[in-house]
Image 1: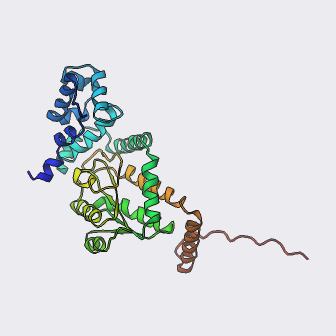
Image 2 (image 1 turned 135 degrees about the vertical axis):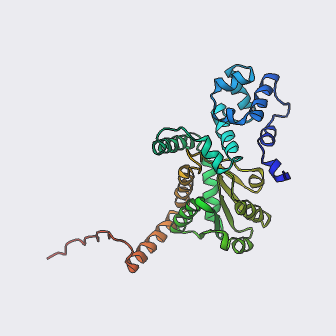
Image 3 (image 1 turned 180 degrees about the vertical axis):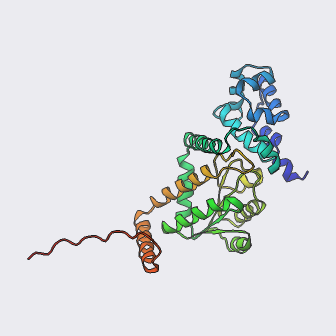
Length: 297
């Protein structure tokens, strides 16, 4: 195990959240269960965790709060994301057996994820990301694999809003990062076990003075250290791959906020794009032309 691997471990993460004076004995017992039995803690109820630790349910809640969370559900969600990130894809699939109808379970999980994202909505984070993109010379979005779909949607809509935002993948990543300066922004999007290129790009962008914003379900210390802000989204799926629904909702929220930074700029950009769509004859359905007022006889 490398030092970086140790930094990404559950125990390192949990102990790093300890309050300066540590935990009381009963809360320390809860912490040890989280560390020693991460699977049961990730999927069990509050009552089950309390029983494992030999404490009451209220102590589990107080422990979560002492570790900096609003309560046990918030801690469990991130704990589970980090636990799943330690598993291979076959292991994740095995942990997801017996869900009944996978399609329905997936839809319900996405609905739960969106509800969780809404409850934890942090307008300051979204506003900070949007304003940084608006002020930047340009923005590079790094998202690979299936996560690329989230990055492409973000970059496309942000460009439509009138800003220089480009999504890059492995082929052009090194050159894009090499051109970053303190006037630029990098948005790193990755979930589950994280893509190594994304982590490296974030750290190199930070080293070059660019502002870095991360969209992730459980950012590793190596990624979080490089970030101005980490925008956390639930990404747990029901099979071997993470859900992208909440991640897509998050970047759409950022674009909506971005469009409100300078409405005149965004309106001009959209009008220019609409005119070009017409010239290239892109759309199957065309808008109805405005009717001119009748002329006086």
